Amino acid sequence: MADQILYLTELLGLKVYDLKRRLLGRIQDAVLMPVVHPVRVDRYLIAGGGGYSWLGVRHDQIASISLDGIHLADEQLLPYHPDEYMLRLVRDLLDQQIIDAQGRKVVRVTDVTFDIRREAGRDTLHVLEVDIGMRSIFRRLAQGWLPRRVIRRLQSRIPPNSISWGLCNIVEPDPQRRLRLNISMEPLENMHPADLADIVEELSHEDREAIFEAIDTEVAAEALSEMEPELQAQIIESLETEKAADILEEMDPDEAADVLGELEEETSEEILEEMESEPKADVEELLEY
Image 1 (cartoon, rainbow, N blue to C red):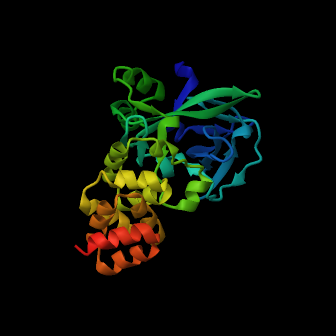
Image 2: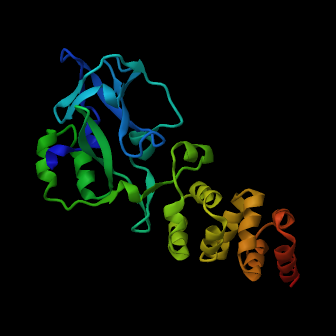
C-alpha cells in the first residue's frame, strides 16, 4: 500500500524527466479541476532550469510517478496560465483552514495524501485525504533533510491523523469561484445548527460572511439563533441587505428584533425595508418596546 500513495510534500520538488530521461524541472504545485474530475490531479506545475516561468503538465502526459521522479509520455508542454477553475493544492489548500464536516470542526491542512492509480497505462494521482496531525508536520519538517523513504520509515511511529477528502469543505469567500470549484454547501447544511454555529464562530469575519451568503436561508436562521447576540449582529451586518432580511424572516420575531436592536438604526431600517410585510410588522411591533 505504501508504494501506492504519495504525499503532497513528497510531490513538491520531485524531478520531472523527458522521454530521454533528461531533467526538465521540479514540481511546484498540483492542480485539481473539480468541474472536470473531483479528485484526480488534472495537471502539474513545474519550474525549469531558470525557474522564472512555470510549465503545465497534463495528467495524460505522464507515464509514471514514484518517489524517484515523474517520467513523461508526452513533451508538448505549454506555459502555465492562471485559471479560476483551478484548485492549486499548495496555494489554495496547504496551510489553509477547512471544515471537517464529519468531525464538525475547523482544521488546518498540513499535507495531502494521494492514491497513485494506473489508468490507460499511465500513472495518475487521486486525492484521498487531507492530513492534519503531527505525522504530516514531521514529514514536512524532514523534507529536504532526509531521504523520502527514510522519512516514511520514521513517520510510521507517529499515529496518522487525516480526513477523507469527501468530508472536507473548503471555505471560499468568492461566490463565483465557489461555483467554478464546484464547492457544495450541503455538508454544512446537513449539520445540527448548534454544530454549524460552533464552526462559524472559529472562522474569520470574511469566511463567516461567505458561509452565510451561500447556505440555505432556513439553515442560516437556525444557526444564527445558536449564537451570541454580538456575533449575530456582526454577521447580519456583513451580509447583503436582501440576504439579511431573508434570514431574519425565518427567525422567531422576538429573536429577529433582538438582532436588529444590536445594529445601527440606519442598517436596521434598511433590512426591515427588505422584509416581507407580515414578519416585518411583527418585528417592528416588538422593536417599539
